[in-house]
Amino acid sequence: GAVVSQHPSWVICKSGTSVKIECRSLDFQATTMFWYRQFPKQSLMLMATSNEGSKATYEQGVEKDKFLINHASLTLSTLTVTSAHPEDSSFYICSARDFRTSGMLQETQYFGPGTRLLVL
Amino acid sequence: DAKTTQPNSMESNEEEPVHLPCNHSTISGTDYIHWYRQLPSQGPEYVIHGLTSNVNNRMASLAIAEDRKSSTLILHRATLRDAAVYYCIPPRSTGTASKLTFGTGTRLQVTL
Image (tube, rainbow over all chains, first blue to last red; front, top):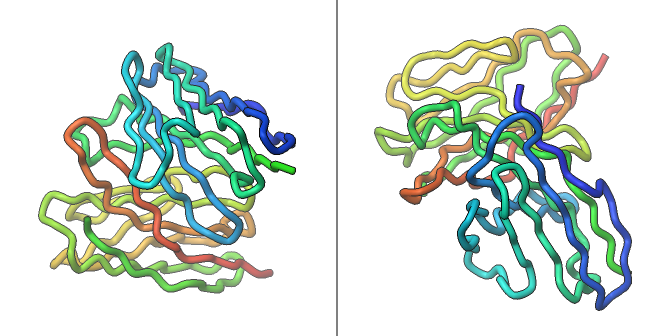
């Protein structure tokens, strides 16, 4: 099956620094990837849709200047948390759409293992 | 967006079948029902999806009510590895992408 990886799996940083998280599709091409955030004991919340070769589409309430997304190739999307603060500490998860399923409403997504960010 | 309602938690004994219900009374005629699950400290994984008829795969079965207002995910023999949060999701199309909106899901506990 298709595999999505994330790097790093966890990161600790100081307040005010920027952190980059990578999301890779290992054995398939992903023209569209998604970024989610999950706080403890809460559900996943979609942050943005990452499109290869074009600008990301952000969900309402997500600051695009704070969460920079770059989808420069068909297998890599990156999320950079700029000027991170303790409230940005969360579990960040990416996913890639399964290009093999036909029909948009039938599309399934493959998820990465997540990146746990702790901002001190 | 179609709204879904799931019980917060359920318990099952190992090796027993588990029926996880989902109410989606506002679903439209073209909305598929997708199920994902999230094991502790991991990203979600796809389980199964369907439109009208019942569906089976190696992981589970999906029974969809005739009026499509509800569905049930069936794990035929629960194992400890099936302990997870199960999400019932009707994807929403934006024209260029199909997005998943995760609700609170059902936390399944499996005991020996």
